[in-house]
Structure formats: C-alpha cells, structure tokens
Amino acid sequence: MFSRLALFLLLGLLAGCGSLPRPFEGNPGATALRLAQPPPARLAVPAPGTAFLTDAASDSLARNLAAALVDQEVPAVADAPGRTDWRLIITAETRGETIVPGYTVQDPAGVDQGATEGLPISAASWAAAAPATLKQAAADAAPRVASLLTHIEAARRQSDPNSLVNRPARVAFTGVTGAPGDGNQSLTRQIRDQLSKLGQVLQDTDQGADFTLVGEVKTAPIAGGQMRVEIQWLVKDARGAEAGRVVQLNEVPRGTLDGYWGDIALVVAQEAAGGVRDVIVNQGGAKR
Image (cartoon, rainbow, N blue to C red; front, side, top):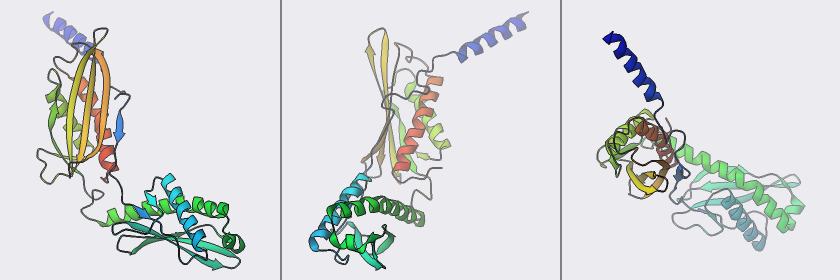
C-alpha cells in the first residue's frame, strides 16, 4: 500500500513539474537581439583616370558609385585613398560598339584582391556621360562590388589559420551577477553548457580570449504584483570594445525567482546562447 501511494505521489509531482511557468521560453523579449559591429575599413572610390570620361564625368561616376555602395552597406567614399583605405579602381574597356566598365578592389598596399565588370553600355552613351547613364552604371555596379568584397573577405579569413573561421572562439566568462535566488549560479551553469554545445570554448580568465561575456540581471517591481526582469548578455571583443549584446525582457509574478530558478534558467540560457553565438559569428567567428 505504501509503495503504491508513494508511486502515485511521485507521478503527481512529475506531472506538476511539467506545468511549471517558463516565462522566457520562446520569448527572449522585445529587444531580444541587438548586434553591434565595429567600424569596417573604408573603401575609397577615386575618380577614374582611364575610363574614357571627362574629369567632371569621372568625378560624377565615383560619387554615384560611392553612394550606391553605401546603400549596399559598404562604407565607401568618393575620395583619394588614405594610407589605411581599401580602394576601388574604376576602368573601362572598348568591346565593339560598347564600353564595359571594370572594377578592381585593392587592399591598402595597392595589391589587387579581385575584380568584376559592369554591364556593357553603348560607346555613344558612355561618351555623352549623361547623369542618368552614370547613375545607372553605378547602380548596376554596386551589388556586384559588394558581392566581390564579401568573397574577398571570406577568402582572407579562410586562408588565415588563426582566423575564427578556422577555430572555435575562446570566450572569457566569470559568471552572472544581480539575479535573485540562485539565479547567478543557475544561469552561469546553464549558459556555459549551452554555449559549449554551440562550439564556443569557455574559459575563466581573459588571457588569450577572443571575447568576454558579461551576464547581468536587473529586477524591478511593477504594478499588479509583477516583477520586471531584464537579463543582458554583453559581448566584448579582445580590445574590450562592445561587440554586441543580447537583451531578454520579461514580467513574472513577484517572488517567482526568489528561490530556485530551475527550468527557467535553462530556458533563458537556451534562448540567449544562440544570440550570443550570433554576435560572435557576426564579428568573424565560425558558426559550428
């Protein structure tokens, strides 16, 4: 009789566990993920000197192309290249009755890294250099150049054995602070486990680390017997600059988190780990 009653009570407890509130599941918050990128290298677009255009038309083409590249989220400027600038060299080639614009990307040392071509334009239209013609040529070239830059960067990372494309990121993480109950310990344990499953290497010191992860919990009482919980996961690069952050916001009944976090910590970590991994990938880390 005792054993049957004990089994019944155990099954009842297990069933009750399945209905525990999991406030962060599937809902990391309205500001769940904000990725911040460091300023990329500038791409200088000087006016072409060998494109069969007048000086004024060459300047106009460079300005139009730089503006079109900015629309493609490439930090381009129509200017002579500085010492640390990448540069886009514009040329033109005669093919029959047409002119084919060419675009070569060079690194700051002036070494060619890749090239692409624009659509052929009638020689007469190119020579006339009407504003609409130059603007259309720039609009056609911008996505081609942006794609070329992406391939150049991917090739550079793949060829570097120390690149995070070729190895997992090392992440310094000392724990979570600010949580009520056993939240600091539970969240620390769970985020370590979840990030390790995603291929990140967690370490206790910042020596040799590619990134540092800081976890912070803030709570505040609000109306209706509720409590607002904000969990921030801040990712810093090796220089200490912010690389990005994941922010989780939710409201729970007051006192819910004053004891054991249990499954709530697991769900928080599962939701946050993917965002933290995305920040690292966005900074050049490998997605494994």
